[in-house]
Length: 211
Image 1 (cartoon, rainbow, N blue to C red):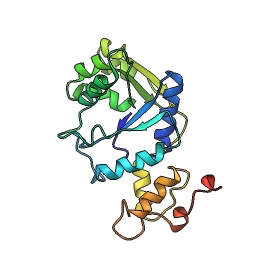
Image 2: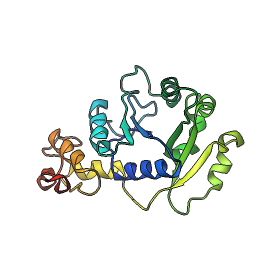
Image 3: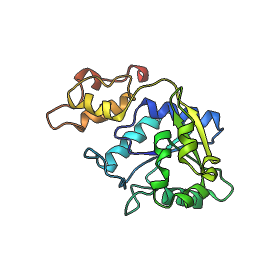
Image 4: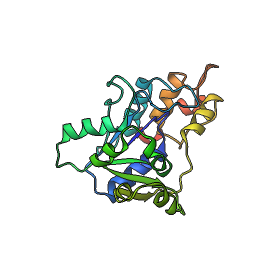
């Protein structure tokens, strides 16, 4: 599961778990982009910070694993290179899925070496209820469409953009991302240069983890 994860949130985690269960995966590897090749419309948080947040978010699930594969590799972070490297580590018998949003799949032909990527893995296109499958059918060639599986995610309307906005003005992030990530954002003053990144109430201990 690749992405900027700036920051990671419960929407990402729910999608990963849904995919793991439905497709009977042994594990889900979360790969924060090291150097996103497509220009973002905001300053991307340094890769190490984003990796730290991913590691904190997935720590409680033994089937989830954070990866530095793109952070430690020089140059732009192309999915085809990541999948090829994972394939070399796991062997030719491993079945690999690339989990991403359906809108990203619509643009896959603009990615770096899309045909080689499609030959190395299958795709899980995450959609919301009511998604019009014809959009994918019209955009993708038959061979790529045959390797693409739809996954309808639960009705969680959470976005990293909204978390950055809320953090920047001191609004609560509780129940939007794991509390360990909330505390990390606050401790490192991410997404703001005007003082604490989140409300002080959010930075207390996680009630779930108390003993």
